[in-house]
Image 1 (cartoon, rainbow, N blue to C red):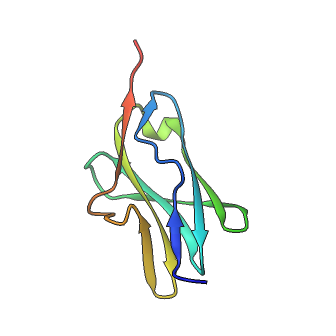
Image 2 (cartoon, helix red, strand yellow):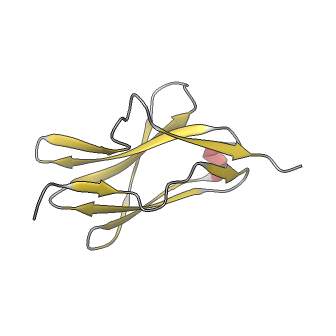
Image 3 (cartoon, rainbow, N blue to C red):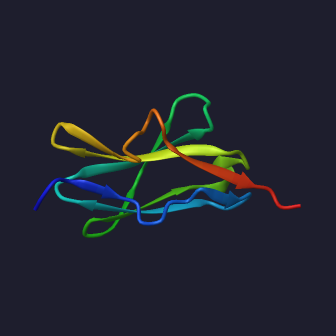
Length: 105
């Protein structure tokens, strides 16, 4: 019971070039339809990727490295609760989670 919550236990702020972004998302309460939304840093509209149900309230999401293409990007996760939308981070989409891609020499 209680309010619906969307939890991302491990927040990634950097990746090595060529690495996929993999997220574990936990939905508590009656939230549904979780989506990972991402875009290149400050460029264009966010692209949605539906999250895959793993078990009970646990979901997994992935942005493939070939789509990231070695560029910094931003993302947020959202789910629907009745007629409302909950997001991680709570400030999204105005201020989303930023990920810096590190290029090895």
